[in-house]
Length: 174
Image (cartoon, rainbow, N blue to C red; front, side):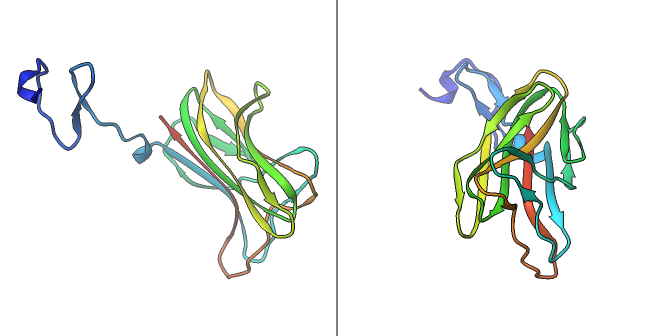
């Protein structure tokens, strides 16, 4: 079936496509303009915070790199995020902590939003990651938390005369 044989009106373009319900729609770009990014940055030569074994430790988040989402803020490493649907991509470094993982925790309601992949940093440096979608019904306090087997720093300093980066949170409003 050709386009001219359909009952849809309008014109296709680089940003307009024909949906399955026979209507033309503008292609969205949720990852293009609604980003919040915050990281744990320390001065060159400064190691990351200590992570405690057997419990969830709130990761330091102290440097907002971009904030294009109205109502999002961070204070004392806790993010305030408004109602809506979001996509998150988070990473956090470790140093000799054994098995570990990160999660995004809604501390307002005491619920876990996303649990990351299992990671390992037995005798060296490691990185825990998480990716996923979550929805909030109202403004909530959110933390990036890290669980480790062995108490040790959340990353080693490289001392390369640039900032040390130990955790990174990126959240897109979708």
